[in-house]
Length: 470
Image (cartoon, rainbow, N blue to C red; front, side):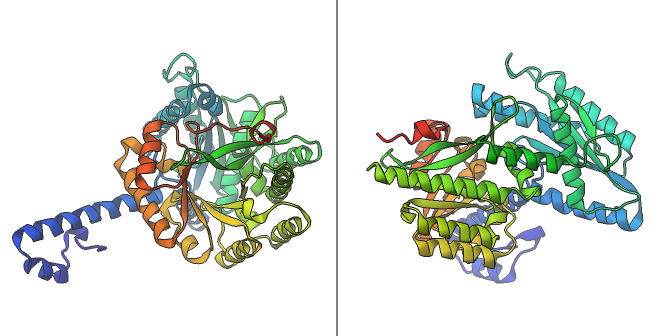
């Protein structure tokens, strides 16, 4: 059906078929074709945009950044990349709920969209992180825009008294001129500067400088690596569990393990606060090994206690394509007491798994052991079909971006129904994430989703409490 009516042009073959139909049948078919065209346009939009804010997503931002950095390297000129993080979003989510957090995210997105130049590109990179690409600007211009954005957010966005005073931390990296670097290095530099701004007290702007210059430390990834290594060696990593319930019975079928790290002030940091930095600094495989070790021990302990439990553990894209991690998992399964049938390894569909053959081999070996493989964040970026074709799996976890606003968003409803049909056709099961109210749970059950998790069905709890044998 693609391009049936694209760009105002009709397909002669389709027109010929329509001409042979009775008027009432022709109207029905034409209506179906128009709906299909609308659906195709919506899916194309989702491929490049964040569903919550309408901003371009990380994938599209990287494409634009690659083009502008390459252009500056070839033809001259300077530009800047700004990485912006909302300070304290987790506290808003925890105290007021994710709807309040989503409202805060949308309002920050509106400010960014309104304050930047027409030539600038604004993106939402992740949950609380945004980016701005500013072509043809100098350091002074980038700093001025950063200050304008910081001040605008700091003026207050009156969700309620508890959210007034929301702030952002801003990191800026320049590109162009002498010492050309690639797009990825520019984005990492801006990210480092943003973390430096947070480290210095939040609600401020930091400009990245090269090693030896005064400014954001170029050694930030090593500092983060040391913190993660300290957490590994000093027992400062923690696990939480969140129940995954059957939508048919309401009972708990399994649990997802969620990684936490104790911060410098004793607070528990969710994986989202450090996992990307761990990936950049080469530490994420060690974190994955730690989680796998803990998970298999927990499964074995519960088996011995006569209260078996099935656990989901997340595996990063770097680990999926690292043969040593696969060998580590196989060795732990061989030597331990955990029943492989109670182990589900979640491979995120948004991870940078570019070597599908290696990823398929990873999944094949785990399934040969009797483990399950789940594709996490399914639908994010709407580029998951290569996974279905090449990577063996047992479960599809539908990305939470399609679930949070499900009762009020026709496009999300359409997408979830389509994913369920795909899973059913392949004989696989589905799990919905971020279920936060009864209306959403009811719709998911109606659509045929098998399992679900979210605050409405069970909040994350410390593993000792969540998995204590009955």
